[in-house]
Amino acid sequence: MNKRKIEQAPSDTALFTALRRTLANKKYKTEKLGPDYLAEVFLPAHYRFFLKFKRVRENTWNKLAGFMPGLTEYVIARTALFDGFFITALKDKTPQIVLLGAGYDSRAYRFANLNSGSRIYELDAAPTQNRKIKCLKSAHVRIPAEVHFVPIDFINESLGGTLEKAGYKNTERTLFIWEGVSYYLDLDSAKTTLDFVSRSSHRDSVIAFDYMVLTNEENIHKYYGASELMKSMKEHHANEQLMFSIKDGEARSFLEENGLRMLEHLDSEAIEQKFLMDDNGSLIGHMAGNLRFTCASPMKDDFSK
Image (cartoon, rainbow, N blue to C red; front, side, top):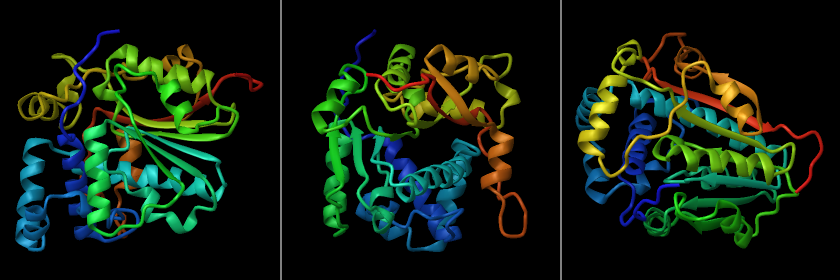
């Protein structure tokens, strides 16, 4: 496995995701299209000030859309999807929830009143995680006792060893949320994560994640916004390269090769229909077409370590 330099600064892409969630919250203010009312606490103070003004918010939305068409819509859908997984896990009293690359995820705080004992492990690179904790404290957001912050370098450190030291138990049912992370890993690191879930978690555990389909010069233009997304990432986020992808239509076989059985899969059209329709049944906008959602469980019939 190729080693990469450990992250030295907070993630830029995580910050822009928080910005997109903030814009969605201020524009739509609904549980479906803009539920993340805490996203803005992770933004710099000058961002928060200028986003008070509607014209600034509209200009920012349009500028982001110019660089990466459909990505804000994708983040809106992704937030709703993983909110659903998180809420269901809390209501089902799932013993453990593991956020693999938590970034500025706010679910442990937005839904704290639903938590009746589920332990939440937030894993991320130390610079991003430390900034997150600082932002939460500055905004006087209560950090529940059930939340455990676990710093990790996903490329160079053992996921299993790190989780075990933090208190994770592989004999207990777990929801793994792997949101906005897989495509920044190399193939070996992505497969190592999936292998850990398949071998070191309860048979009823679930991993829910998003991924990017493999594109090339011949097919990239068939996916809405894909060309602009790839170009903008290279130009503006060169320190966070896009690497891992799965060939379109091969997610099920890829998961099975890594010891997991697919439970659900959504392509861009299905995501739009399920998460991007307003109350009048109209599509709020197309999402980036080369992104997908899926969830899976270990294939083993009986639990064993």
